[in-house]
Image (tube, helix red, strand yellow):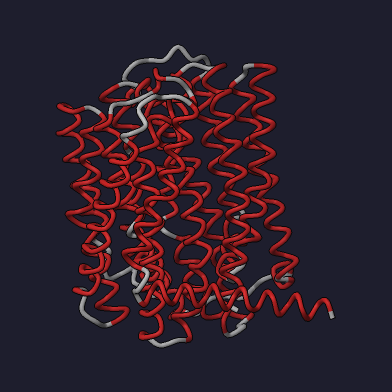
Amino acid sequence: MRTANSMKNVAVVLIGQVLNILLSFGARIVFVRILNAEYLGVNGLFTDVLSILSLAELGFGSAVIYGLYKPLATKDEKKIKALMNFYAHSYKVIGLIVLVLGLGLLPFLSIIIKDSPAIPNLNSIYLLYLANSVVTYFYAYKRSLIIADQKNYIVTFYKSGFLFLATIAQIIILISTKDFILYLLIRIVFSMIENLFVAHKANKIYPFLKEKNKERLGISDRKIIFKNIKALMYHRIGSVVVEGTDNILISSIVGLVWVGLYSNYSLVIGAINSIVNQLFESVTASVGNLNAVESEEKSFDIYKVMLFINFWIFGFCSISLWILLNPFITLWLGSQFVMNKWIVVLIVINFYVKGLRKTTLVFKDAYGLFWNDRYKPIAEATVNLIVSLILARYFGIAGILMGTFISSVSTVVWIEPFVLYKNGFKISVIDYFKRYMGYGLATLSVAFLTTLINSIVLENSLSSFIIKVLICAIVPNVLFFLIFNRTSEFKYILEVIKLFVKRKKMLKLTSSE
C-alpha cells in the first residue's frame, strides 16, 4: 500500500509540475516583454517578505502531519477529529497574525527597497501579495489531513490544475491590459477556489469533518504537540532567514533590478525544486507510516535507498544546471539577463548542498525528531546573516550566496544526519559521511567529464543548446550507472521496478480475462 500510494503521488506530481513549469516559463517571457525588470524585482522581494511573515506558522504544518500519522494508521477517528478541531482553530489564529504583521510592515517598504522603483500603486501591490498569502491559512488543516493520509496526489491535482488555469488567465490579462494589479487579482481568486475545492474533497473523503466537532485533545497530547511546535519554531525561523532573505539583502544592498535578474535563475532552480520537492513530499507520509509500524533496521534500509536516489537526482540536476543555465537564460530571455559564471557556480553548489539534505529531513521529520536539533536553525540563520552581510559589501550577490553555503556546511550538513542516526536509527553517523563523501566525489568527477565533453560545442544557438541537453541527459546518467550499478541500493531499485512491471502485466492479464 505504501509503495502504491507513493507511486501514485509521484506520477500525479510529475505530470502536474511539468505542465505548470512549461507554462510558467512561457508566462515569464510575456512578463519581461510587457513589464520591466523592476516588476520582476518586486515579485521576488515581496515573495521573500511574505515568507518571513510565515514565521507566524511556527512549524504547525509539520506538527499537524506528524501528529496524524499514528491515528490514521490505527484508524482512530476520535483522535483525528480532536486533532482537526485543534488545528482548525490554530490556523485561523495564524492567518490573522500574518495579516496583522503584514499590515504592520507596510510603512517600512521604502527601507528594504534601495532604489525606489517607478512602479505605481506599490502599496496596493504589496497588499495583494499579503492577501494571497493569508487566504491559504484558513483551509490548511484539511489539506494536511489528506497529505498525512498518503494521498498527496489529490492535493497536487488541484494545486497543479488551478495553477495552470491561473497562469493562462494571467498571461491573457497581461497581454490584453498590461495591468499588474489585475494580474495579481487573478492569482488570489484562483488560490481561493483551489482551497475551497481541496476542503470540499477532504469533506468527501472524511465525512466526519462535516460533523459538529467538539472533540478535545487530552493534556498529554497537547503537551507533545506544543513541545514539537516549540522545536519547530526554531526550525521555521532558521529556514525563513536562510531561504527568505536573499532577495531582501540583494534589494537593500545591491539594488532592485538585481533582484529581478536573480529571480530568473531562482525560477529555473525553483522549477526543478518544485518537482523534486513534491517527489519527496509524496513519499513523506509513507515514510511516516513506515516508521510507525516497522523496525529501525527496515527504516534504515529504505533510507539508504532513498539517499542514493536523492544523490542521483541532485547530482544529475546540478551538473545539467552548471552547463545549461546561462545558455538557457540567453535563449529564453536574452543575453542582458545573464549573470556571470561565478554566481552560477554558487547557485548550483547551494542547490546541490541543500538538495542532498532532503532524504535526511524526510526521515528526521517522520521520526518526529524536531526537538533534538532545535537550536541548529538559529545557528544556521545567525551564520548566514552575518557572513552574507559582510561578504555582500565586497562581492555583491556572490557574497550573499557564499553566506548561504558557509552557513550550510558549518551547521545543517552535519547536525541533521547526526541527530537522525543517533536518535532514529541508533547507529553511528560515520556511515552517512562515508556515503556523502563518496557521492560528492562521484558528482565532481562526472561534472568534470561532462563539462569537458560539452566544451566541444562552442556556438550559442538553439541547435547547440539541444546538443548540450542531450550530452547532459546521457553522459552523467551513464557514468553514474557505471559507478554504482553493483551497489545494493541500485539492485534494490531494480528489483522494485521489476516487481512493479510484473504487477502491471498481471493486472492487464486479469482485466483482459
